[in-house]
Image (cartoon, rainbow, N blue to C red; front, side, top):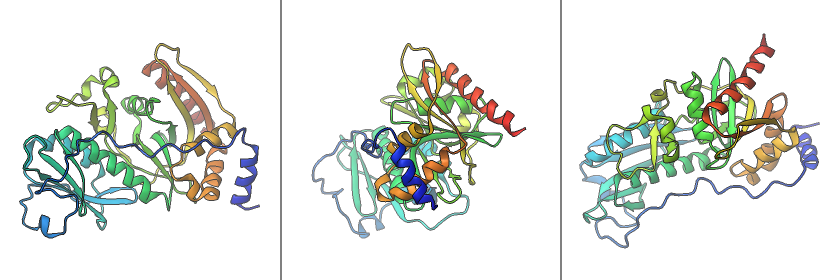
Length: 337
């Protein structure tokens, strides 16, 4: 029986059909001013040819999204762009497929313009708003350009001692906060946003972007507070190294501990097992572009859950969540001995 046939058999055993997929990484609110003469919505290459570029990211790779960022002299952006691009700089520079350019808009009330190719993506009043939109666009392009060769899940992941932990979940479920807690305990960083799985091997291609830690979790990570440019921030962009971890670069072993987190304020942290059918259904609901290749994607999720420890984690505290995951990882390590 082929993988696709096994997958279709598994689909018939699921308790309910998958719910509609989450919208891929919705864009943050951005200030859009209409029709500025110096920053039109569409431009040709001559628009950029004679500008004075002060900063370049160098070639960067976000799985299937290969890009570079160039900026005019906007000194207030440098402290924000550094954490964004440093984890994604390519070790073996690939060919660049997309080019972001940040230019100064003459209107002092809306001084920043962001372009991708010849299209203006946004205008922004503050550097934080522009970088937040840029972060979202990189995430979105990573998902869209990687889904042909990978099964891409909305999830965070970290690894230690050959055990990879995957934390699937929608926004506000606590996956970034939880994976940040694991990194602080010695895990190596894979991603906090999108897990890209090779359907043939189940290995993960890392997407080690800076962790986007929301303001509600800032008190848990005081060591990550930016030194400058904190006014107006709603997220800290935190490289894994700032949490005492390191980012994975090569292929990461398949996840063997899959934990679905759900933060519930004031609750007691509790871990409960999930059936394989429930796990496959929830993973399918959190798979980007699932319906474009349903047989391949479902077969991969079925194989992924075969032999994995799968649990739901209700989170009341970060320390409790880390301890619960450590227990699951320890059990898998004991099985390897």
